[in-house]
Length: 556
Ligand code: 9MR
Image: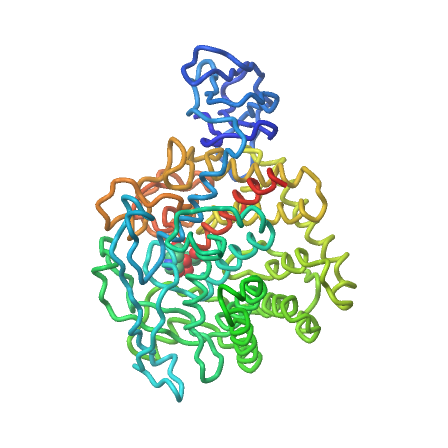
């Protein structure tokens, strides 16, 4: 019943655990074998928040700074899982969350030396993919065979979706742009680790190379996804999956998402011309062509049921259907502007800042462009420089709301401040809030933002109503049965490590048996549960950003 970050805490960082409101009095931090008491504290006042069923109290032991492994003891309740206090305490989770992308790679064997017990023969070569009737063009009529290899599997399924892999890749590239020194020395045991590119960029390239194949060279349009018509069986191994794969319908969202990511990639990889000759240039050409296509086709929304009425075969996999692409336009324009410095793109952004400041998610990407403008604030041209003070104020105000929310939740974390935080993939909400807070910290150097970001990492690693550390393989109580075909179909008991499950979601769209409807407890560790216990690349990436940012800033 004691909820805390099951990995641990920085010596000089805040250290809080949450206990049920029913207990009161003193608490103790002792050595893991319970023999020596290092700290005694008093539990805080009883807390109740809107979206939580139980009352809580905080056990704050921030003054304890000695490096070691401990437990927290509450008389009458028992003791917590062991946790560490140490420098670089999130190093391993940060590394594992990036390495998880390697495990998600399509079209390749994973060798023992890189994947350990999760090594596996490759699957989904995707060198013979069919053009779906919905995606046919003059140069590529229906059933044309194209090659579209590599990329990451999206989630627990084996399909590849541009919109979702776009925000994911952008989040990884943004982590690199914000903390290059940290990532330049990071070594992850990837097949490419011996080349001169940083491992994070090598991993990102695996998906960028795939994304580039998703553009129709004839007109610059971008297919929405590459997929089997139906999801494959839960126990199908990649090497045994042989259902035909299609590229499906070009969409405005896919084109803009692609344009944004390719523009950012061009910027990032321009420093690696020697290693990747021509890559930065061709990425920018591709980005511009996709942007032009979207300008000519601004309202081609992805509507799967409507598509299925018109074209064969029916496609019933993830839709990533977004009815409003105005934020995608803004994001693509911002990235193209920053890479080219051409104000034509900047002027294509509707208003900076827009009144709709929404937390990033696969369908809501406006702030990604704002973060990029902020990280390149030194290089802005006059039009953008003029808007920047207002943009900065808006980003800081956005983070202020999160800090405020964190003062009111019963877990004292920004996550859960609003009922709508507990959506499908709520753990990505926590991660993306963390990114917004890190951005505000970078703009202000105000420690409150960093403390709140860290509180959300605490949430993800155990300081939450479920008591789970949501990253597979890390923590004492951690998901063992994610809705993840790679983990289900292999012979290994432990799931693939470093993957963030979706998290509490009272929507319960999977129809599995949950124990409760209460928002922050609506989670089960069962394979059945794709609405709370699937893993997904767009949930992992904000975790990568958040954990890496905290580690990186330790060294700044
Ligand atoms: O993450 C997506 C979530 O926001 C949507 O509500 C949900 C239903 O459309 O789909 C989720 O994405 C899934 C995708 O469609 C297919 N691969 C697995 C994804 C994670 O569950």
